[in-house]
Length: 466
Image (cartoon, rainbow, N blue to C red; front, side, top):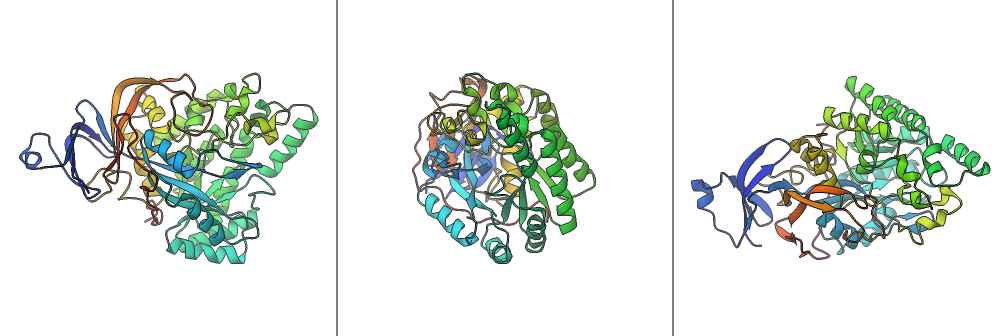
């Protein structure tokens, strides 16, 4: 392994901002020292990266991606190779993807299938959550085994009856099991039984356009499911992490629970912070590009999400990256919005969009790093190796230029999808150089990484609960 010095930058972590040089040895952060200090002058290295005028930040941790996910008769368009490469371009150096249990099959079988998809393909480090599609005595026992080997979070769905859906009894049993083994239950909180009624009624009335996807998946049904999940977690004595929170009413349920001191956590995504039902209503079926679940909301919900991020009632911003090409995939739902594959691309855009939020005054620089790097690393048992810049931690480091402007576009992104959800949006700030465990994978705008560099990372349990 080479030795690298990153010199002259402003090192920003969730805890601090300081001008410092960073010494990287054997894939780890070896030391930080004031520029020009006797300590720094004594260092020698194979490579020096000049970060003068730039930020030096931890590599992003995206705790919610779906590469190669089968859904609605097709599969998400990014492979583990293309998706992790795009993540690196965007300054993310660790992803946590979702392995899926098939109904009637063992958890182990699903986990093994995802290991086979990812092994030897990833440009950056990766880990797995486990989706529980079939809660029964056998799968509940498997939860204990998975926690022991570093798969420490389990996703359940209150939506998608017949596919991923679990009823309240199944959810309660899974929560009780995780309360005993240290696992963290992640919840897709929407009342899918009620939503399916509204879908059927909308289609029968001829309301088939993409915008009706958002209208039937009502904010109140997200809030109701969030409330119910919180109460079930209280009964079980279990922590709860609610994924892709999109609605003001759902945020209010989280705030109320956290004000009681409950171990309840929330995640939102860039699409809910920057996009809205205006996008879903774009003409000529263009709105299909923005179909995801939970759905985009009217713009007035955004203020509650930003406030939740500032007050730490929402702890994490992940992408829920689940891309489907407009041509041939999203088009499966022409004439029937319920057949549009649910998901948006975004793994490459998250760090830049959140830096734009700093520029716009929504969050501070340190909060940017907290919600994009440090909090997801702690939430999912990846700290202290990931999410920070400190001696002994993995040298997952981004040199970020906060001054350059760029225009987000499908023409220039590296995700394997034929459109950008943020087409034409101008943002300030751009990744310049990325190190993954000390190896330069993005070098001043060139990809220098390789498939197979990324390692599978077994995880500890949630570090917010210790």
